[in-house]
Each structure stands twice: as C-alpha cells, then as structure tokens.
Length: 266
Image 1: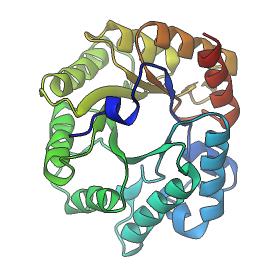
Image 2: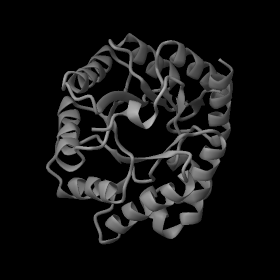
Image 3: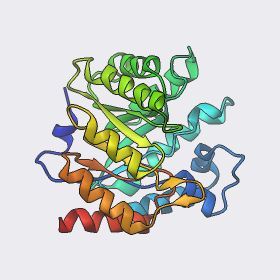
C-alpha cells in the first residue's frame, strides 16, 4: 500500500504543476478540440508545458488527459498512453506523474472511463487524480475505481465549486466528507479549479482535517488574479497545513514560479 506520504516523505511543501489546457490554447491549440489529442498531434507543445512547470519547481506533473472522455474514437486510448509517456519523459527522476481524468459525471456507467483509468495504471502513473467532482456519487465511483483498478496506488479525489452559493459549498463539503469518511489511507480529498484562490482557500481551511491538496484556478475568466496573489495564497494555504499546492486554469509557469519561490521563502 502506497500513500501520498510514501511518495513524498517528510513534511516539506510539494509544488504541484500549473494549467495544461489554457497553456495549450495560448500556444495555438484550437478551443473546440479536446486537449488530450495534443498528445498525438502536438506532443512538442505538451512536453514544453510540462518542461516549463518542472523548471518552475513542480514536483508532480499531471498527464494531459483531463479531457480523455471527450474522445470516443479509436485515437482516445493512444492519446491517453502518449499523455503518460510525455509526462514521464519530462518528469525524469525528479518528479512524480499523476494520471488525471475529469471526474464530473463519473457516476454515469461509462465503459470508456474504466478504459482510461486502466491505461493510466498500465502506463505506470505514480498516483491518480480525479478532478472536478461535482457530486457525492462521482466521488464514490472514483473511490471504487481506485480500489478495483489501482489498489496499490494513492489517489486524490478533488471537488470544485461552481457558483459560490451556500448550496454549492455544501455540495463540496459532502464530496469531501465522502472521501474522508471512506477510511482509505490511500485516498485523499482535495480541491481543484474552484472560482479562484479565495474560494479554494476558505473551503480547504474550513474542512476538518484541513485539505492537504489544493490546486485552484487563478480566478474566473476575465477576472484573473495576479501572480503575487497566487503566491500569497500558496503561503497562506501552507501555513494552514495544506501540503500539496499548485494551480489550475490560468496558472502559467511564471505564476507557478512565483508560488514556488513563496513556498521556499516561507
């Protein structure tokens, strides 16, 4: 049995990576095309993003497979496999590779989902990350997939806010409670994206125990926060006992570097 603590012994902060999708789109990838296909059609772009995140200090590289379920043709499995291989090449021996998949709607019985997770495991990811869980049913299904397909791997099941309402926050807390109440040392609850660092920080620090994995976006489209705000978020999250800290949508390698320096100086 391997836990996150086994992958990263000690108590130092672990800088996660930044955004892949927004970086690919900034580099010219068409918005209408699932970004997972860039693993096959533009592997140099994907590798370049991973490389920039590593240079900024990231110790975990997430595979470019978040959108894997949007590809239903024969290219899907190949794109997932190549996504792991690209991340592994760029991670080298200094970083871990997290196999990621979008988790909203996981409760739907989709054989493609099981295939994607199975490929991530076969290709040798170090951990699984189910991102953007919107329902308790999604979280429970993710936990079941880990037990069935990857019993030896740690996993993080991430919730995310949507509209910031009281009902929205309650839904997030229910997802977190589902994961924390499962009694599985290999599975942890986390947050990704949310409505930006403020939402993520308030929720992460209000949970008991505090969420250790926090990876917020830089804010809503058109209302992104500056790099120094993300750096301040990183310091505050760390002081609140979060340990695995990175950035989701809008988080560039420059932003990630500012967060890494802040964590190193704290």
